[in-house]
Length: 256
Image (cartoon, rainbow, N blue to C red):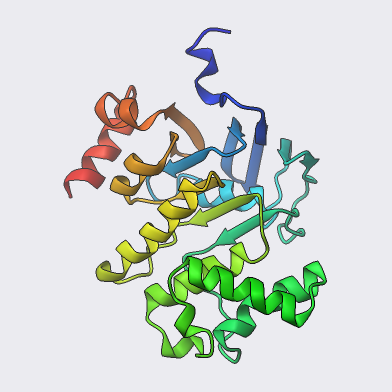
């Protein structure tokens, strides 16, 4: 296998592996023969125009969407194929969405302790200690006793990140985590994400924040019309994209 053939394969043993994956919604094929491997500790940014299949791909990793063909293996576990989504998220996968999805009737601390207590069997004291640790990690320890409605959007998204981290996953997925935020709040969330990446956490992030991608990603993945069009390190991806589709996309997002 030469270097060109190996472009979509990461240098370390894969923690996530797609092989010939297809996914459709009714008659519409949203993922077309997707094959890619992501190494343990690798940070991958997926970008592409709206409707290209980015969010569907990332939702397949944590079982929110089921695929109909091919195989997906996440940290040694093959995910089941099927027609519908909603299968249980594989252990060790945390996800942060566009919307914060916090329980409005629970305090920040209670939002964070719920999962570790129910899913991991931690005592309240253990879960509380863990929650406070991750609230400090995302730089909002003082917000523990507030309700989500009292926080800014940026703070709520950092709570959502802390909640995912409190499950102590080996993989973190981010699906356009800053797209619902006001511009002045985007930076604080991206800084937290960059710090998580710096710890060596495996991260797969769908985002249009190209400055973040350039600084944090080990590899860029460009998708269009349900296909992976291009995979490259950021330096090559931004300076010399190979496909016209990728050049057009970058021209739009970098110069709009």
